[in-house]
Structures are given as structure tokens and as C-alpha cells.
Length: 308
Image (cartoon, rainbow, N blue to C red; front, side, top):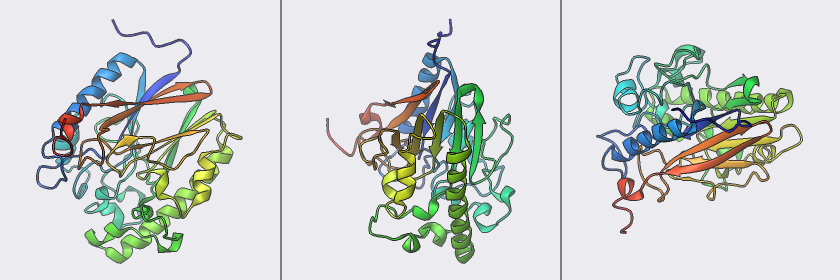
């Protein structure tokens, strides 16, 4: 029998990032076994929860260079063939990571639909749901709003001394349109912060779920963004998720207390930057999002990084 979720829980979701392992280009993950172990555990957790409404995907979905078109075979080899059909039976709410942009036509175009991963049909479960590079979706039945942001300008955010103007999307060097790429990513950054500000003020949802490819400690040059993620005056609960760093934890990030935020880059796609490889669960209540990690055995993922 399917489980009966707690009566006061409105729904749940899973969060994953940095997962699209490639046999020819990868870091210290030498096989797809880590990604597959996490995918299988997502299915187990989904069955256990019984009320998963969507998956949040913070990007770097297709290592090393993203998709070259909307029908790229990597949809099969790195997503459909890895994640069980039930895990793909709910929408995957997504944003672009830095690797996703390398060969993607969307980084060389200002046309909203040019991107290989762009899809505005939430009922089309054959690919991700990403209606634009920056987007939001209201879930009144969950007392929740979801906001996805393209903040790839902050790829070098680990360099905390950089000012906003010194930040740029270094991976433009791998695209076919280096100069245009910088301009496009800059425009999407401005659009991202504008959308976030609007939804902070206009959304009536008690719970706000915000995500991009980068963890909060990458936004040293935008302290007001992290401060806004810490606010409680407009929303009872704000949960933020980023990836890029290949670990799944809430200790390496810049605090947004009393709200919560996670790095969820331990998806098994490139390398182990720590022993915590897996995904995060969000449980949605009327005025709170409760979050916790679900990890796989690090010996499956990171056998070369530490002896046990």
C-alpha cells in the first residue's frame, strides 16, 4: 500500500544538482555508479514519502558541455536511462548550470526558446520544466511559490574579493559566441535579481523556494541578495538551493538564518568535493519548509578520496 503522508503536510519535493555524468569527461568520479546510486535512492525516498510533487534541479545536468539541441541523445543516456520512470513522473523544475551552457544554442541567442533545455509545458515530462532562464511558478495548493534564477555570472564566486563588475561567466570561452555570451549572461543576471525582488514583494505564498546553480557563499558581491533570503517579514519560510560545489550540505554555505539554504551539488556527475553525496528532501507545511539530506554510501561515490 502507498504510504499515507502526515495530514498537515501539503506535499514534498526532492532537490538534486551536478549529476549528468559523462564517461569521457569527469573528475574523480570514475563511473556512473554514484549517479545511479543516488537515482535509485531518490526512487526509494519518493516511494516512502508518497506525496512528491516535483524535483528541483539546480543544473549541470549534462557534463561536460550541455546539450546541442532539444533532441540531443543525452536526454536518454544521462537522464531518462538513469532515473527511474517514477522519479521522472513529476516535473523537474530546472535552471542552467555553467556546463549546460557550453554547446547550448541558448547562450548565443536572446530568443527565449532557443535554449535546448527550455520547455514551458509543465505537463511535458519527457524533459525538464524551464519556461525561461529566470522564471517562477505559483503553487497555491502548497502555499508555495518556486523561483528559478540564472546566476551564471557568479561562476567565480568562490573568489570572495571580486566586485559585481569583476564577475563574469568564464565558461563563455567554451561557447561559439564568447562576446555575445558575456552580454547574454549579464542580461539574464539583471533579469534574475529583478524577478527575485518582484516575487519577494508580490508573492502571497507563505513559503518561497528559490534556487540557482550557485551556493549562497558565491554571492559575496551581492550581500543584499543573501540578506533578502534571510527575511521573514514577507514569507514565513524561504528555502534556497544551489549547487556547483560537489557536495550536499548546509554547512559550507553563507547563512540565511532564520531561513534555510543548501548546497546540493553532490549529485554524482563530476567529482567528490566532500563525502556527502546525495540529494535533499523538502517537506512542505502551511507555513514552513522542512529540509534534510539523503546521502549514499561515500564508498560508492568517492572511493579514491578517502580510505575507510
